Amino acid sequence: RYIAGNLYGGDNETRIQQEIVLGIGGIHALAAMNIHPAVCHMNEGHSAFLALERIRRLIVEKGLSFSDASEAAAAGNLFTTHTPVPAGFDLFPYDLMTKYFTQYASEALGIRFEELMDRGRRNQGDADEKFNMAVLAFRHARYVNGVSKLHGVVSRQMAQASFPDLPLDEVPVGSVTNGIHTASFTSSEMADLLTRHLGELSAENIADPDYWAKADAIPDAALWDTHCLRRHKMVEWAREYQVSRVVKRGGSEQEIDDARNILNPDILTVGFARRFATYKRGDLLLRDGERLLRMLNHAERPVQFVFAGKAHPKDDAGKQLIQHIVHFARQDSARRRLVFLEDYDIDMARYLTQGVDVWLNNPRRPMEASGTSGMKVIPNGGLNFSVLDGWWAEGYDPSVGWEIGRGEEYDDLGYQDYVEAQDIYETLERSIAPLFYDRDADGLPKGWIAKMKASMKKLAPVYTTERMVREYAETYYVPAARRAKRVDENDYALARALVEWKRKLRSRWHLSLIHI
Ligand SMILES: *Cc1c(COP(=O)(O)O)cnc(C)c1O
Image (cartoon, helix red, strand yellow):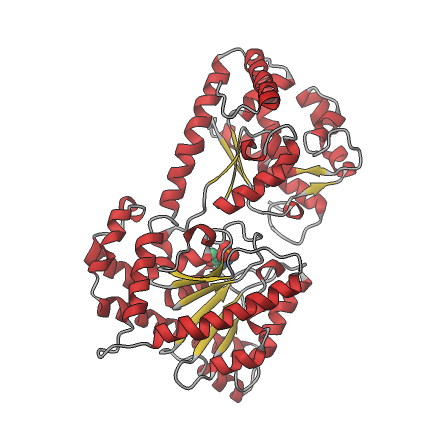
């Protein structure tokens, strides 16, 4: 319990202990409950020690050699990677590995410690290389995927190091794009509206394009009123939240009064909430402060922004981004229209995604493996405005939202920030705000509402866990279970020989897709 008590803040030794508990302990715990999974899904490298424990069990239970057990275990392992940067993986130094795995290697697995180290090294035999949990996972999973199409491509490039003799498009890394748990993120008001006009928002319907296709049947006024109601609720909630914060830290009457008057429930509201990792560029919007202030205080078409987020306790650069925003929001001309909410959590995420008109995301492509917060606005009628990265690179088209840039990647990062910040201002001023404030005789923004419906119809059935889990099952869990069973029933040595033969064939003739 002590080991698992804190996710962050521990040192490397705490980390390895946690991952031993998770990976090896996890398999023990399942076995103690008499659960013997055919397939294990390693969600990021943190649980990858489970691969070793599965091998150990096959050696003990079936009397296999290490290499046969290794192949058999891998047949039933899926590895999902969530980051496009090698720096995002856990690395353990030699000494730490020696301390915890010397005995495990020789007694449990029957291999030399150096061999075990090699299972986690990109270059086998390189004594300077640390033990990399992603490499361990990758070597012991016959199925590997990234979390969006673009991230699948990036992960394939990273993984190619382990398959030097394969052409890039044959490196066996696929993708399953993330989704959100739609029922949890849809406001009750919007869920009621959907139920009235499309039928019940149930598990069967959520990923069904035919269900969402009926969104056109929702009367414009009803959709708009429901959405505006949630914007009002969000503003009310944000005011109470800020007031309670100011009171808690003993702020002045003036500060309490300021907090009571933040935001305007009737103007175009843009949300930006996420971890403040530097690649997400939380302060990009502030690049041209004067221009931003003009937008906030525009006489006919004002725009307001709600920011929220936390930085990793050790990420000083991330904390500086937050300071930059908080500092900017202190000036009188910004105070009411640009708000930073502390202590972002899932409850706050629900208020924001249910109430904003536009969700902004401006990561440095291709660093956002998927991103999910933007998906949360979809069933609530919010629209996305993002860099073509992660899920938005595949979800975007001009009928459902707005893009930042055109999917370029840059070497000169300062220049990229400049170009993309300009693009954000241009699109907000020339497209987004005019569309929002273009009202008909009944006060309805017809063009905007059409976009809300187009976004729901196209995106809601796709970016949901209902679709995602089904895709994992069909693409990976079922085939992996079959393969594990086949490997189990057949001669392990034969299976391994076939794999070896297939690898050689591939490298000589670049044959694609040979199945054993
Ligand atoms: C959805 C959510 C996230 C993840 O958002 P990303 O866009 O993937 O960065 C993080 N924290 C909370 C509280 C969330 O609700």
